Image (cartoon, rainbow, N blue to C red; front, side):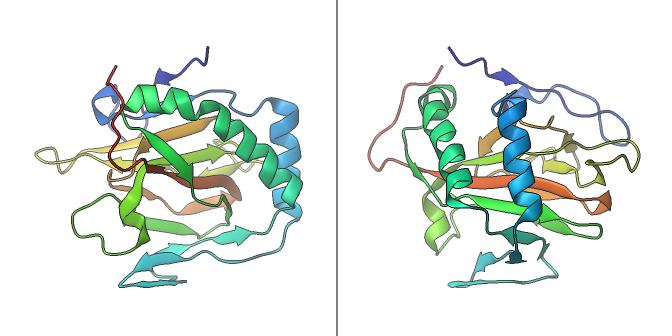
Length: 219
């Protein structure tokens, strides 16, 4: 049985509290250390291009919105992570009460010093008019860890920050995921990646779509 746990936000400048009400789920050790290290090594060596955003019927790089590099890892690495995701999909369906179908192609991402992603929603919102409207659960897999100093292999800054919904519009919750962990959350939740201030941040992102006309029981 997969051990999924609700997580607590980081301390420091952000408000220290439990965020179970935000329906964020963390699966620790989604990638075991040898697998994580192999995936990270491939990502570090991979070539890439500017990461894109969706909007107004177009998919394009908009650096004032999202500044990151999407990496072209080898097929074996991609298939390995896809198999792991397939294994956890039933548990995600149970936890979120949403019947899930396929996920979008994996995005292997590098955020270098100075990179960021402004506050946004991934999909499943009333105003969505593109292919993101079918997104239900967003996935972020952390390949390396945030560190308090410029230690080799880590990064500073680059926090994944969630914006609470109305009426708590001023609330910000920062999540720090350990290397190899998977974070899942509803795609309509507003979130951002703060600017990386040192090192390089490596993650994988994807989005599960919902099964039309199907709804899992909530638990």
